[in-house]
Structure formats: structure tokens, C-alpha cells
Image (cartoon, rainbow over the protein chains, first blue to last red):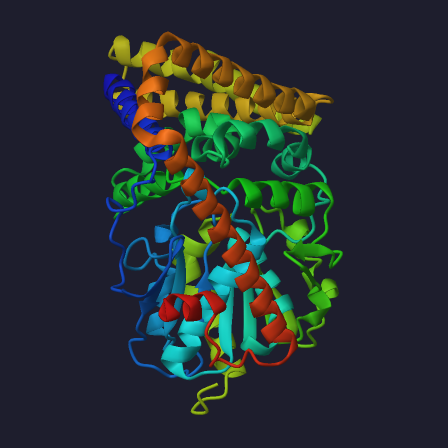
Length: 362
Length: 153
């Protein structure tokens, strides 16, 4: 019994100090990205700007000529998609024969607070897509968006449909009118709080985003996860996975003031995305413009983006080739669980390959 | 919901009031229970407590006015932070003067102008990219306006 108390106490202290380190990282300007886990798959940087590094992961044996651009979210660091061998979406996709590019958004500094969707979509994503097109010679590419990255991917595809061969959205919030979702309800009401927050900090601070996510499951973050760690500590790779996952949980980065204002107002408060009235600079992103094949991957037990928020996508877009895939996992488990690497992601890769014309270069 | 809460409460009572003391007593008196059983009983009680606490939090989250309270708390937090920052700055009056002397009004003005111009260039780049798309010229060979501008410079 003494061992339980000792070990739980030790885990709790380690967790608390890791969380404190995470908060300290969010307070640094610029946010330190150098000391991150290296990931399971080697990559090279093929394009770089002030807020974006474009990573390239080479296919083990390329069987699909259409490259895949993974659009990561603007909220945490992207190493969750390439965590460990056997727990990496990127590794699975490259093993399935896909050349993968991924947006690694550089955490914004205070002077970047003006950058909104107009800049991120019409400039940064635009340059990233052009860089992929130039490197591969493909006129059309495949796009995969995860969570908030899914929103960016949808906006991109709605505005530049001629550049996308097929689209995969993973745990993407589309309809913000979801009952019993604390995060969505709070985000909708945040629009009243945005102005003083932005005025004070310039950007939405990483610690604030971290606090919002953790307060959704306070008991889990304060205690349950350590009990689970104690129970499973002798499981193969569990402890390492737990530490890396916690490192990612505490990797919240600031969100630019303009994006934060636009997303709380347009997505969560006024629910404009699903109504095709979402403004990106001077343009309006009409989801009906999305006519390419679309695969919508939903985590059945997702408590961050509830499934009901994503299932309406099929009716909002203009694609005839549309399917929902529901996978029995949560928001992150859909990406990192071992089961997802064995069942879900090979299926997604196969779907992408089947929609791409092999040998035509796009 | 009610049945779930009742179930969680029963589990907690069973694990902490009945099972754990019993296993502990057996272990203390050397009546056959080993320390692993005690450990398992502690973990079970702990799990039962966290289940109940999770459900309690769920109830609190769904309570009327909770979201409003959350929003107001954030506002007050920001206000407190601002007051604290202003207070700290007022305690160090020299730092502002040093900054002003080092940077100078002209440098500050120029920096602001540069930042403003960069924003304008980015906004124009976004517009050009959108127009390119509408004209059907976005087929993979077009450089963004900013790239072109950078290369020209």
C-alpha cells in the first residue's frame, strides 16, 4: 500500500512539474520548438516562412503519385502525428506508399497577432500547396486536415477546389451547434471575452488554451491518469507513450489574436462554416464548392470535437463521393492508438490511393 | 444519469467503506490477505472516487449559468493580470525611460510603419492569390506575389 502511495505521489509530482514546464514554455517568446521529441519518421524541411515550416516525409515505396498534404492544427505542436514507431500516422501513411507533406505551424509571436484566416489560408497554405505542386509537378494534391487543421483544409478546398484531388477530414468541427458540449458552448460565449484577452496579450496565450482543454476533464488530469499509469506501468511501451503524450498535452502554443477572434466569432458564436458564410479575407468559403472525393473520419468517443459536430459535413459539401468513417476511439486515440494504425489509417491510405490516378502525376 | 450517479456512489461506498477496511484488517492481522490485495483495494477505491467526481463535474458543467461564470472569471483574470502588470511597471519607472532613450521615437515610428507595410503586403498577396484562383491561373506555376516581390528585391 505504501508503494501505491509513493508511486502515485511520484507520478503526480512529475506530472505537475511537466505541466508547469509546459506553462513556462507558453510564456516564452518565441515559443521554443527545438527541444521537441524527434518523432518516428525522418523528414526534411522543403519550404519555410515566418509562421510555417513544411515537412516532407518520403514514402517507403511510393505507390501513389499524388502527394498528400497534412494540414495540422494551430493549437498544439504536431509531433502527436509522429509519436513513436507503431503509433505514428505519418509512419503508417508513408509505409502505405504515400509521399506526405505536413504543415508545421511555427508558434506566432506577439507581432504576428494580426494574422487571421486570410493570411493563414490565402498566403501561408497557398504557398505550401504551391511548394508541393512545384516539387512534385502535380496540379492536384490530396489534403488531410486534423481537428482545427481540418477547418483550414475545408476552407482551402472551398476556396481553391481546383488544387485538391481528394480530401480527408479527421475530427473536424463543422457544426458548432452541438448540445452538451462544454468546449463548444464556452467557445461560443468566449466572443465576449476575446477583446480584453487580445488587448492584454496580443495573441490568445497557450496557457489559456491549455487550461480550457484541461478544465474539461479536471479529475482525469488531476488523478485518474496517474492511477491508470500505475495500473499499466509494466505494459510494453506504456510509460514511454504516457510521457510523450503528456508532453504533447502540455505543448499548447499561442493562437494569433486575429485567428482567435475570427474562430470564436465565425465558427463557434455564429456557426458560419456549416452555413457556408465563413469569411476568409475578401472571400466567402462556400462548402458546396467542395466537389472532390471526401472522407470524414470521426472519433466515436471524441469529447473534444463531438461526432455530432462533424456528421453534418456530408450535407454541407457538394461532393458526390462522400463517406463518414466512425472509429471507436477518442479525439487523439483516432490518430495515435495502435489499433488505428492497424485498421483505420491503412484504410484511409487505401481510400486515397484508390482516388488518385496512378502514374499521371496528378 | 441518476441511475449512473447512484451506481457510482454505491461503488465508492462499497470499495472504500467495506472492501478496503476489510482487506486492510486482514493484512494487518496476518489473516491471509497479501499487500497486493490491499493495493488493489486502494486503487479500486480511488477509481470509484474519480468516477463519482467525474460525474459531479459533469453536473456542474451543465448547471445553468456555469458558462457565464466561466466567461466572467476569464474577464476578471485578465483584469487582475493587467492591474498587476501596471502596478509592477509603476514600481520600475526607470525601465520605461531607458527604453525610450534607447529606442527613440523615430525608430519606434519606423518600426510601426514597417510592420504596417508588411501587413498591407500580406493582405495584397492574399487578394492576388484569390484573384488568380478566380481567373483560373492557379495551376501550380504561379508564384505568390510576395515571393515574386522578395525575388525582385
